[in-house]
Length: 154
Image (cartoon, rainbow, N blue to C red; front, side):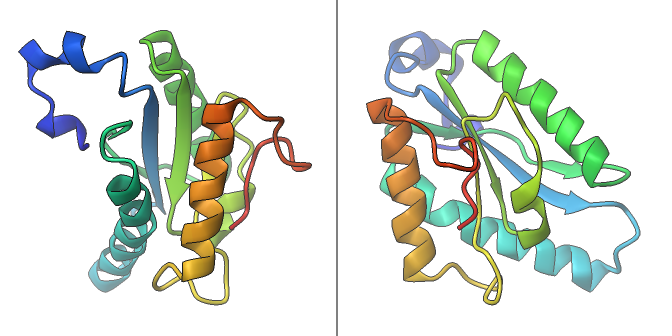
């Protein structure tokens, strides 16, 4: 579910089931031409879609984090947001990006960093769908993180 679909009165009832927040990161800096910003947002949408549709009753897609000065600043801000989301009651905070360069961000408070890897960042492949859903389900089962420390490069 998207955050905007959750009515205030229904949140207490839904909260126990919606234990995973998806934090979308576009990685924009403000220096992009309009068509470049559009392409980045389309890639982000395509990275989110498989998770939103597969886990509609279990995940909440939070507002996207679009702009930061650079990737290091983005990682710091994303980490702070993940920590706050966990403090607010989400068991997991999963960073989702459509920008392959962001897959290596260090976000210690994120349960995982997911997104399609090159060479096909334009649309998620079935391989991405499969790996992303396995990673989310691994989190829910509580099995140990991947060798990369929980950050998944898909």
